[in-house]
Length: 269
Image (cartoon, rainbow, N blue to C red; front, side):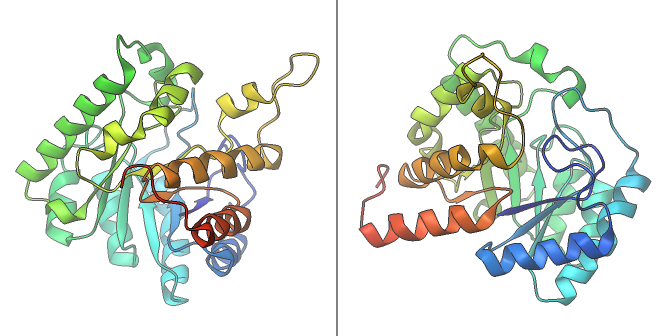
């Protein structure tokens, strides 16, 4: 899954693809580089980010989705709003990536159920502005597993087909670096819920902290975290993850091709 942020303030590439033509060209480029789905988002979910209204979010994403769909690119919409998801599906999106797992908008389940598109349910405890204050766990793996299970149950009760549900542990969302690494080590516990798992670490701050320089300064956001993103993505697929969500597609696709050719078994199989 290739990340396409059509926002001015995303943590890694904010503003780079705010222009419609640049966004569409980059989406097509990521598809050429090996992405199976391009995930288009119009509202930053970086820690501390403020919200934009639904009209602005739609203004950013809908023209890009229409153009990519017309070019034969499979697109998912990265949104927590039912109204934006519905408009994006009408514009050609084939999946909904909801970082709130359906908690932010009670109407989202009905939109997904009626459209029949896949729904990515991410583990979430609150909006970006205050989410890091919610990173309190006694057992992060067990609690994330339990809270994801609740979101799955709610989706099923709302009429979403089980085969349309994908889960995401939400690394970096109300999680410390320690929580992120614990979830990475125990992906099998989450995969045991019985649903495909999307893994998304791309360029996140805990990778920058891991790769801090000799003076203790974290590695800046952007391309200089891509090698670590590739490494975590391959580890996740080896552990049984269904998919990975990344900014830089080509290197991850190349690494996964090497892993596949090696014949190494998935750890969860």
